[in-house]
Image (cartoon, rainbow, N blue to C red; front, side):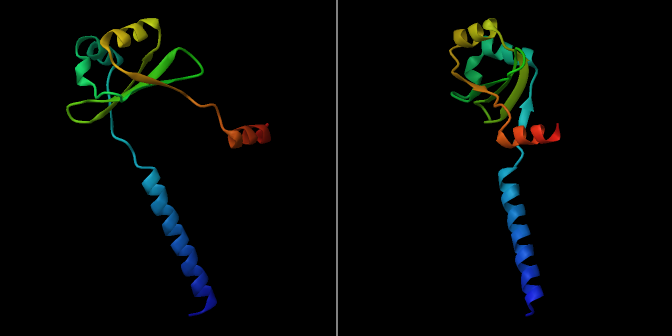
Length: 120
């Protein structure tokens, strides 16, 4: 086999390997989108429908809204909704007894800052 064929074969294997790894890490999660009002009703009336320790509140640095993600107990289906984040929401969550985790949205990383600075 000639050297050029070997080089081509190595590059093809590297590309295929990269694509396999990319597919493994970028699997789309199937989330059920629900209305925020439905989420609040379930929190107030039937908190036992939520799978324990799966509720996450992802806050944004700009504004008073958040993304609420969690899992249903009956079918392990993930859900997501976006809505207002305020004291009344926390009071409802606390009253329901649901455990939740607040995850702050991260600021841009180092390379994002470098790119923005470079593009100016």
